Figure (cartoon, rainbow, N blue to C red):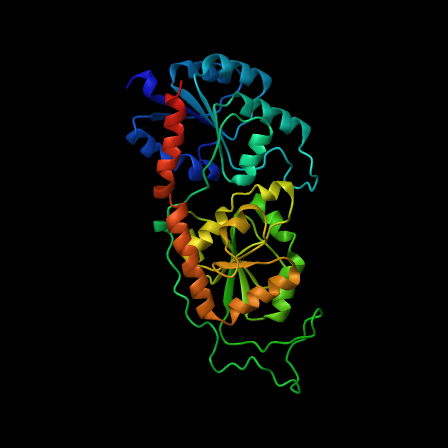
Length: 365
């Protein structure tokens, strides 16, 4: 194959989840369009200098998330015929910061990188606007996708004992203390409903910010448990938690065993740029989603159609309560989410858009 038909793809780690979701699925479709990708992890020291210099042997460079130092940009500018920059996080902000101002060093490197790029591929509109604000020449939005065929659509069955009376006789003495927030008491039923959260150690800290909300759900709805699928564990004061280690082979089954997907997010500049992959996983599984209305989470979950937008702790408990006692609502919202995931976010749907964008810029003058 001639050098003009090859694309150099550079990333920090090929086994990174972002690479698996945003780059890897499009390697074969690009090959079908005549563009062979050479996947490389970013080198260090002299190896990096040689790596960037080798860009002259390719039609272009597809750079995944890495922002450039002054010398990196200098070498790439001299060697690369075309540069495509791909990112799916609001990388100019620190993840734990509530400051509306970008981090100065991160912003400087981001400006430098997108200023060099012929095309910027952003994971959502928030990130696209960020790239445009700081000087990107051309921006296209490609949402994070997934293979919906890997996810088993949930069949929502009645989860509560039909003989369970949720209209309590208030004269009866309950077996447990009422919620300290509401003084309400719900009689436990014989079956439980599982909420689920899936993520990683780095994003679990965002869920921990909502500990009071989770405990409030436990006090008002003792029939609910939470499954956490991650490489770390969550402990709450009162809510029962099943901590399961994430596994690519088992994640679809572990999600299908649950009933409601949750995606709490703090409303920070970094969180607004998240690409809502866990929400897409819930949707692909046919689970209704309760989410904070932040960034792409709010865009992907249609309020009252495929789930609920929860604005505060009280609203969170209201939304979960509606889904807890209504399996038909869970089924209807889950089906709507599944349909949208298949129609808009499947790799097969996104691949032509990715290929058109990349081939277009590589073939442009």
